[in-house]
Amino acid sequence: MTFLVLTSVIYTLISRFFKTDITYNELSKEIYGDSSIADIMNWVQNNYGYANLIMILPITLWTKFLFRKYRYNFYETFVMISFVMGVGMLILSLESVLNYIFPTTFIINESIILVLAFLYISWAIGQFYEKKVKNYAKAFLAYFIGIVTFQALAFGAGIMYDVMTKN
Image (tube, rainbow, N blue to C red):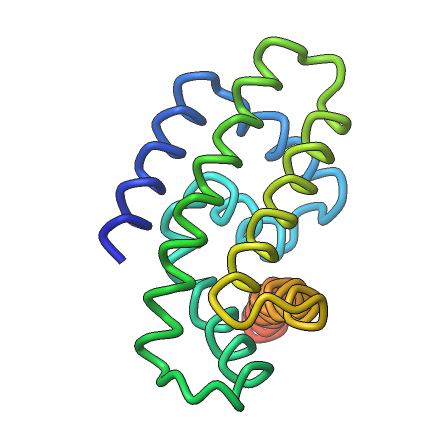
C-alpha cells in the first residue's frame, strides 16, 4: 500500500508539473456539462492518486472473485493489486510527459499509455497466479470490471447528488 501511495504522489507531481489535467477538465465539461458527474470526474482526474486508493477496492474484489479457487485471502490480493497498480501509476505518469511534449496527439498518447498500463497490469496479475493464458484474460477482466465498477459508482453518486439537490 505504501508503494501505491508513493507512486500516486509521483504521478500527481508529474501531472501537476506538466499541467496536463487542464485538457481533461475541459473535455469533461464538454461531455458532462454542469452536472455533478463532471465535478466527480474532474476530482478523479485531478486527484488520481487518491482515486486510485478508492479504485483498488473494486479491482481487488473482482480479482478475488475471479481467482477464488487460488485461496488467497482478501488482504493478500489487496497487497498484490496495490503493488501492481503502483507500477501502473508510474506507467500512467508517462502520459503527462507525452502530452506535454506532443500536445497535438493527446488522444493517441492517452491510448498508447492506457493500452500499455492495461497490458502490464493484466500480465502482472496473471503472473501472480498460474501463468496460463486463461489467467491473463481473467486478470484483464478483473481490472477492467473493477474500473467500470468504480466509474459506475462515481456516475451513480453524481446522479444521486443531482437528483437530491434539484428539489
